[in-house]
Each structure stands twice: as C-alpha cells, then as structure tokens.
Length: 336
Image 1 (cartoon, rainbow, N blue to C red):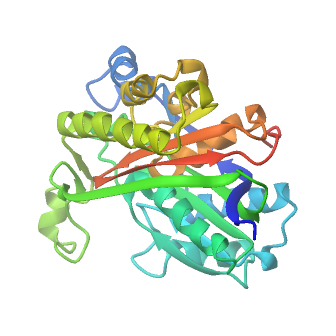
Image 2 (cartoon, rainbow, N blue to C red; image 1 turned 90 degrees about the horizontal axis):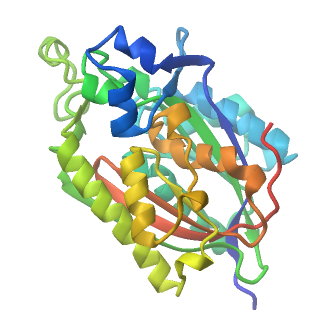
C-alpha cells in the first residue's frame, strides 16, 4: 500500500494596504533607515488600519483567495488550523472566526500558538490528519496583527514587526516522494525571559499597573534572542538535511522565518546554500510572525517547480523552533 503524504496544493497571502516605511519610523523614534536596514534588512512593513479588524480579517482574506485560486468549495474544507500570536480574542479561537467568515461550515477549527514557529507546528500537525487518511482538505493559515502589541516608543522592536496573513491548502498525495517528508520541532520554555508579552494572560491579567508599565507590548532582549535563533534555526535545518541525506546541491529553496536578514544569512550559510536559493521578503513586510513562511511561499510561488526540495526553518519566542523538509507537488502559478 502506497503511503499517503500531505502536499501543499495551493498558497495565497494577504497584506494590508498601509505601508509603514523606515522614513516614517524616523518621525516616531530615534532611528534611521541605515540603522534599520543594516541590522534587520527591513525597508517597510504593512499595518492593518481600521476599527474592529483583527488577525481574523487578514486570515479570512488569505483563505478566501486560496479557495478561489484552487477552485475549492469552502464546504469541502474539513479542518482549518490558524496559527497566531495575536488572536482576535482569548476565546473564541481565531480559526473559528475565519471558518465562519469564509463559509467553511463543515470544518472544525482551532488555533495553535507557538510564536514565530506556529506555521511549522501547524503544518506538521495538519499533515498528521491527512497521513492517517482522516481528512483530505486541510487549510493552515498564519495570521498576525503584530502592530496591536508593538510599542511604537520602543525602537528595538517597533522597527521589526508588520501585519499580514498567508494560507496553504494541504491535500493527500500518493505520488512517491512528494509532500511533507520530515520535520524536527523543538521548544524551551526557559526562553520566556528573553521574548515575551509580559501581561494580558492569566498570570498577570490586565490592570492599571500593567497598562501603565507598558507590559502588554512585546518585550525582547535582542542579543540573547539573536544568539539563540542563529544557533538553533541552523541546527535543526542541518539536522533535517542530514536525516534525509540531503546535500546543499539537493536543496532547491530555503524558506526561512523572516525575523532578521542576518539570522537568515547565518542559517543559509550553515546549510551551505547560496543566497539565490533563499526566499527573502523581509524587506517588504518585516516580521509578520506566523505569516512569514506562507507569505514567502506566496511571493515565490511562480518560481517553484514540481519536485523542488524545500527546507523550512523558523524560530519563535518562548522559545520555539523547528525545520521541515517538503518536496513541492506542483509547478508554480503567478500570484494573484
């Protein structure tokens, strides 16, 4: 009996219209374009404006585009997993809201929270539902409105993050060697002190004190995070390659989390992969957290060929990190 694997059969993204440039940030905090570009590689990021619009708004836009692009009836979707660090509410799940907004009435849905590694964790989880034969159409959507938790008085974090969403459709394939082949996922809760939103959860609920102390924004100790990310993203990417007997020549693309251009470069160098094989769009969107990997796929989809070997790598707060190996299942189409 031929083994079933989960293959991505479509990808779509959504980014808000408003562009926050480095020049505009210069009017908000003590920074400049050269400082930002040199340290992060970011030139601009997208920001979701408007009342009563959260991560679900962008997630639903990405899923709607995906359904149209793949000619998929929303009633045929069986599961939607939304990875998000900025859910619309504590409850209900943002995935539930997205399911309702796109008309996926027959799908059950839930959220995954693994910070910037969320898409990898969610895609790996979704693959299990397909490989068992339980489901045939699963959507993974990464959506984050990071501007809702960014302190625009803190120049160390406000330059990094942007808003956006990306979604993929996963379906079963029995074609030998295609689809998600392997993954390595890791976590270490001791990293909480270095990258955390200090208040707003059950440990420190909202109060006058927490708001006054600006504890509902992202807290990041950049040097510690950078060091941990560089080491661990590279390590798991190399581990996935070794486990699957892949050399740098075998890899068609590295799809890395778009956190910092220097982290991306360090990871690709460790893998021995040239820049021409690395998906990079951090200059356009900044770090969109759970949306970075699907947005990178969306931007590069037209360049992808059936049979391409893709390595995904990500690192997130808390800490979480991981890598995955996928053999791409279709010739790319221009993004619409």
